[in-house]
Length: 261
Ligand SMILES: C[S@@+](CC[C@H](N)C(=O)[O-])C[C@H]1O[C@@H](n2cnc3c(N)ncnc32)[C@H](O)[C@@H]1O
Image (tube, rainbow, N blue to C red):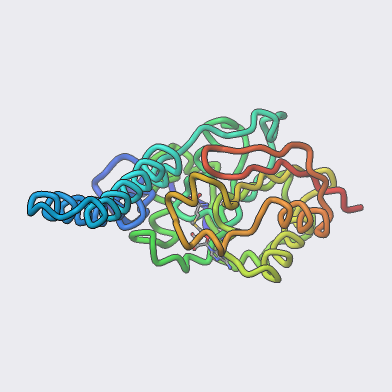
């Protein structure tokens, strides 16, 4: 059920005054563990005089893990709100915007900073286990700390079957959320986005696709990522035309527009 944020609420959830995006340390700093362990093993076997073909593979694994940490820290930047990655998104500056899979509010805050006159609805089922304190209370607190108590709401619900009327949003955005679904659910969700948008409504979609940076950071997990061609086809099937395609950091970006009648 939709809840308007109460500006009177205090920051009882936490004494901190900055948004707690809450991504687990295993994702943001976890690479440092194998980097340190394999680094120590490299030093140990080198010190006892082992041949290069013993310590070199250990050094390669340690270096790869450290490179993965750097990609997560300076490329993926999970725990940071980023600048809105497309200046043409909601250029009018006003309207009702849906954040699909809003998580702890990272994209909603980014939109609100760039478009302070927009109203935002964040939709999430809060199923993710890799976000600390994940739930509408934490997201509402983050939005409140950003001064969005009167312009942002959070709604619990499934993006595959959205609890919204047809054509009830002027624009929509989604960051690192729809790509977590299986292909049929991705198609269903994109159709839902199309259904709830007004004709011509923009959709800013950020998804992970296989690339060099994410291969370094995620290693074998890369095989689960779908290529750009998949997203182009799925957006088109759901009734979108793509106006711009690019990247935002390590993530693929599509700015699409609903062409449903
Ligand atoms: C990686 S997080 C991204 C959150 C946020 N958009 C961001 O950029 O930080 C993915 C989010 O999708 C949500 N999610 C996953 N499946 C969902 C579904 N079927 N319906 C609604 N939300 C879902 C998870 O709870 C999680 O908050």
